[in-house]
Structures are given as C-alpha cells and as structure tokens.
Image 1 (cartoon, rainbow, N blue to C red):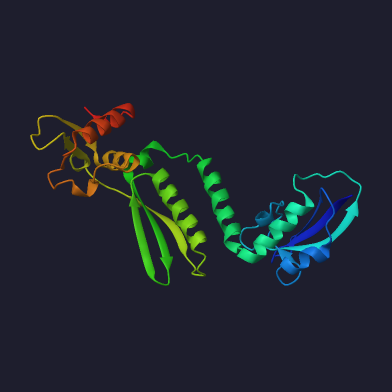
Image 2 (image 1 turned 60 degrees about the horizontal axis):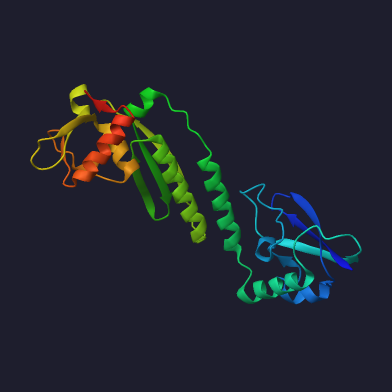
Length: 253
C-alpha cells in the first residue's frame, strides 16, 4: 500500500490552493503530528515536497496546512518513500521549521527573473544620465551612484536579496533616481594614461570611463583630476580597459 497526502496553502489575501501527492509506502498522520508546527503546519520545501505559495509575494508566507493521509493502491507520483518523508519531518522539527528558507527561495527566484530581464535604454540616455539607487529605512538614506542603468538594476537586486536574507522586520524602500547630466564636450573627455610616465594614453568620455570601470571592477573614476586626467599604476588594467572600450566603440579619436 501507498499513502496519499493532502495539504493546503492559504495566503493572507485569501488565495487557497490544495495539493495531493502519493508516496511509496504506508504513513499515518499520527506519525507526523508530533513534528508539525501547532499540530498541522509545515514548510513543504524543507521536507522535499512541492510548495503552493509564491504566487503573491506581497502576502505569501511559508507554512502549509496538512489535511489528511490516506492509504491507497494508486502508484506513487513523487520520488520519496514514507520512511524518508517521516525522517525529513523529524529533522525539520528538531532543527526548527525555517521561514528563512522560503524567503531565500523568493530572493533566488527574483534574481533569476532579473537576470532574464533585458532593459531597453535609448542611446542618448546611456551617455547623458547618472543613476542613483536610494535605499531608505528608519536608519536613514543610503545612496549608490552608477553610470549605467544595468548596473543600477543589479544594485537594486543585490539590496533586495540582502534585505530578504536579513529577515529583520525592518521596512526598506529602494528606488531609482535618474539625474540628467549637462556637461560640455570638453568636460566630458578624460585622458587615461598607462602609467606615471604618461607616454601612452587614450581618450574616453567620463560616463563611458565610469561605466567600464564599474563593469570590469578596475580603476576609480572618482580620482579623475580637475584637468580630466587619470593615471593607471597597473598597466594590465590600462590594457584591459582599453580593449573593453575599443570593443564597445567608446574610445574618442
């Protein structure tokens, strides 16, 4: 004989969904009750069962309600035995039903969705705007400046994932501020030198220079001098950056 397990998920918004699965072997509900939260609640992903939440991230929580266990001659439709499942419930209870697992999964799903997200940005906007990611909380505002919309979105994603994992009950508001930059052609051009000898150099717009440094993780655009010059002490970084700028047609002739 096998066992049919019925359980339900209900969100704070009233969304309800039921799930029925069949496992290999016999299991009684009385065997699971000692390991459930408040006698009926559990987190499916913690015991390798399919979860029904995640459809409304604003109000979803991790817990599902166990409804019934009945013996059946139907064939199993999930790769787990009654003995294995009972052991997983026992371990989950002993280690503690962990809500953070659910929130980490939401963060991972958000990260995957953002990685598939393609931002269409007008060429004019890319080169004439500064993007500020602002996170507000009761501790004040944090501002992160970027010269690329893509980097700004990546920063927003990182802040979201970090906030979810903290799970500290602190409300945070994350937003994006676009600051158009009005600069004349002379102010925009930076001369980048290979080393202190200043024998090799290339010219690039300040925004493109900042974007490339951020993308490659090299250089420090804030150290561009008042005369619009920047010197690399690491010649390999100079070469690496020049290749990147040339490939993206950012070099100024």
